[in-house]
Length: 119
Image (tube, helix red, strand yellow):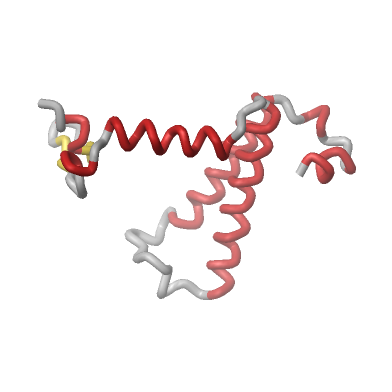
């Protein structure tokens, strides 16, 4: 990706802030794809190939900005993601938290029951 950016002289614009804002914009575009579809089943069985292709393009945009942002910030994203999985395994042990969630009635939001595992 660095070569792609360098060939276009875009590095001057790739500050952490600018990349983050661009990433947020791409997440917004990704959200628009799902905005009026209601709940969508896994595998997108009712979607046309053109819609799936568009989804793939937007997911790719998000991934590319995320990778570029991590690179500019000096973060090894692969290592960071593996470390985060390790931390989550400790924080949310499967023996206590497997497939459980509860609705927070006061806020009307879904909250992971794992937050209450220790109670």
